[in-house]
Length: 489
Image (cartoon, rainbow, N blue to C red):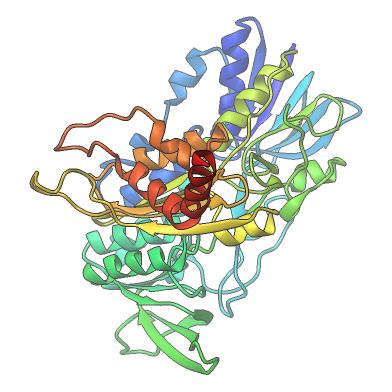
């Protein structure tokens, strides 16, 4: 049996590894569009900052490690078409040579592409499956997207050749925030521009404001409610190679235009699913144009599975959505690889658990925010608490801002958002909430968890439990009192 996986990132490699793990006799080939299989794209900001010393250290596994498992890697090879009826994959090598690769089972893990905003003067990277790009400013001018190792090398080339003194980062999501930190760490003056009301729009604005304050404390200029409209080369003698034109909208609706000079512009405004190959082969698409799959990662096309950022996400609270995450891609790829061999495993579903470090702060979330829960049909309410990360009498205690969302009808825990200092175990505490949501626990039930305690690291009631108790007091205490009074007669 010949299994072919398209994509050398999380999903494709996970599928191949699982197949080889289960069947040492399986013939497994991974088709990789570039020369960097199994690289950590999430680690790019730390290579740019200099914290990761060499780009090769971003590899989860080396080329030799992967081939030692028994898989075959076809590097610098683009999959251009799937012949579903003929069970053949059409390929194009870097030199333009075209070949055909037969398969018995196929796993599509084509991932995502950068979401290129409509900024005048910004070059579109183009479609590798079709000729042509949109003219405009690109890496040679100091204007960059950031999604691949190739993009990373282009950014590093700009940093090395031009030693920029200033940068504009367009977008304040996870990668945008990490890159603002990385460039600041290199001594570059950074302006961060975000069109939403607050940075890190995946958390409530109350916590986003704390992230903005952390950025400002480290010298980053933060511009929210601001949309970049155009980029052009700056005039000779200006204090920067580039001029960025933007418009800021005030809460009252008035708009102010601004012009910002910079030596480097980084556009990181999200991604979109790369479902083109599967769609052209007849696969059904779902939310955001992602490939529709069931929980066995089947596409509906004969012997074709798909996984990772190119497919829809089965969310444990929302049902079908699209939520691209590396952790999800690894799990989905593993399911696809096993089922391609004849297994019967299902993807258990995502909660969108995420965490990001911004200088000395850490922000995390899992599950649903209140407006998301309301749209999903729950009766949600949210409470915020600010418990210390450990007992206050032990030196170095810091508060963690925690927002808990629960369903007022059932008491079920629906979501949590946290921001605290690095070292406050924010990542592990959001994991506690994620585990509780995964197993449909109530908010009140968190108080029953047997969590660890020692004064330097926590409290008898952990911070996650104190925040949960705050929610219970705010939204369930009257009902609990009434129940007790009724029981007493």
